[in-house]
Image 1 (cartoon, rainbow, N blue to C red):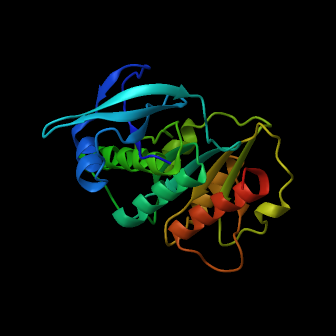
Image 2 (tube, one colour):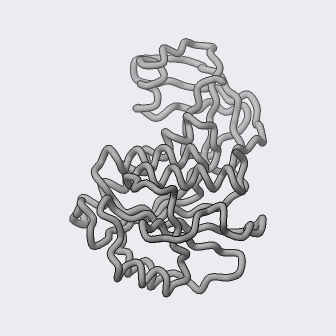
Length: 247
């Protein structure tokens, strides 16, 4: 597959598009793309555009749009991941790999045992960074829709804002004391929306687990071993895709 690049603006057949500076640098200096080489552009609105490099100059790189391809690589599952924030490298890994695995949206949350504490200014900067991680993951894995990531919020505030769930919504929380596994849950409807809550390294507190259960979250345990938070999130999403998705 030719290299894929995200372009935030509208794209039309026959258009000459100037790549954003960092994208152009990556294409020319890292990937060593030459004039005439095929590339793919997408703007997150669905589908992708076959194109080729029109010109490479010191300050700009332009791309000529050849045709539109209405191809999608989305999972049939709608999965919202509510992930407790962790140290930078681990959080980046969770976001990157969950996008590759097909997660639909991401909600960073803070919990009682969260190791990382962010000021409002730092939280805004991290959100911008996470958005770039998501775009890069979509470029790599072939997704043409960009999963949204919401601003950081506390678990209790997030739960208080959640609307009443309907019969087509399955809410799951990972818990070391959970008695059920994913494979023992009733097979969900094809239109089911999943919400998955993953706690920090030290786990959710008993009070947090109680709040979630009162909000109709099902405690689930993944295997007999205690998993790190980044392992737990990705293993669970992969298992969901195997059981009900497109794996």
